[in-house]
Picture 1: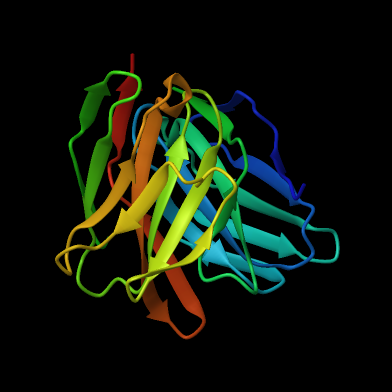
Picture 2: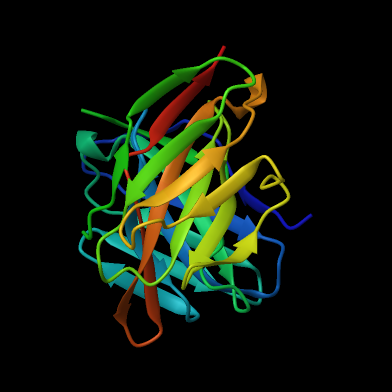
Length: 112
Length: 116
């Protein structure tokens, strides 16, 4: 069974600090990696994706990918109370047209 | 963000009844998907749909489930005989080409299905 693993949290982060979220995956056929944010009772919202090793920045978010170690991470800089949500890591295989396998998510709580 | 709409927002049905969940992807979506999320659990892939055919499906997507795009715009998920364990949020998603090697999936707001 191919797995996507995340720490469930909650990850408590002071306002203005950096939140660091990690995700590991077991399927070496994984090609693309996505971070979604999900507020309670709502649908997943795409934050960003990454498919090349290294860092990718988008505003206050930075995704990092290390395929050799099979992990992907998300940094949230200058965390705001509105960032309080569950962050879902999702992976897509190279031979799939979009089937995403999700982790269980990490709950982030940003405290004022 | 390319908007996907879903109806109804909440559906209550009795065990054994058929339900149809509806989704309207936007016109430039390439692929369409259904996912479900049982309360407190992971988002799970059900099925992907392209060019009026199922392209991929999970083990969850058994003979009780079917999908179709009857009129070229609506995309539906039918559950023929609902079970208690079908109670979940059902999300429709659409795939958008966002750039070279860049395919992004956008989720609709979901339908909460409650089977009693």
